[in-house]
Image (cartoon, rainbow, N blue to C red; front, side):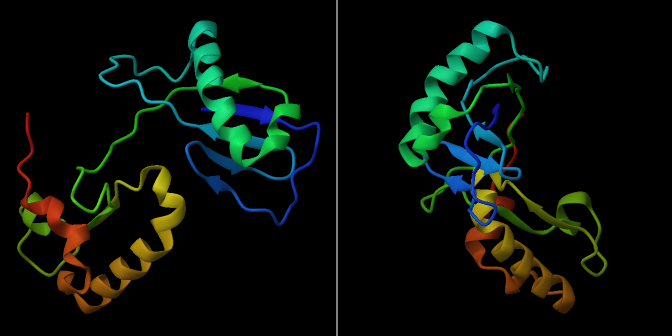
Length: 160
C-alpha cells in the first residue's frame, strides 16, 4: 500500500474507488492506494525497503491513474506491507466468510461465536451486506439466514 498527500484536493463527498487498484481516501488530501500481491512471502514486517516501494509504485500508479488521473499530481509519502487472509476461491469468486463458529471451536450451545471475515479489498463493497446478513442470523440464532455461498467455507477442511 502506498500513501499520498495531495497537491489537488479530492472532493469531500467523493467516494473511495475499487478497480484494478483500490484508492481509499482519508479526507481531501490523503489517499492509500493498493494493493500488490507477493505470494508466498515470508516477510511479515510492515516496513518496506526503497526498492520494494519503487516496484509497488510502478505497479500501482498506472492502475490508480486509470480511474483517478489527478493522482499523478499527488506526492508519494510512504509504502507499507501487510498480510491479507484471503477466503477460498469458489465458482462465485472470493466471497466473504460468514457464519457461526460454534461447531468449529467445539461449542454446542446457542450460537454465540460468529465470523465476518475474508473481506479483502472487496470489503469496501461487501461490508454492509455481510453485516446485515450476520446480524439477522445472530438475532434469530439461525445460520441458515445467511446464503450458503457465504458459509460454504465450513465444508472445506483446513490444510496444514
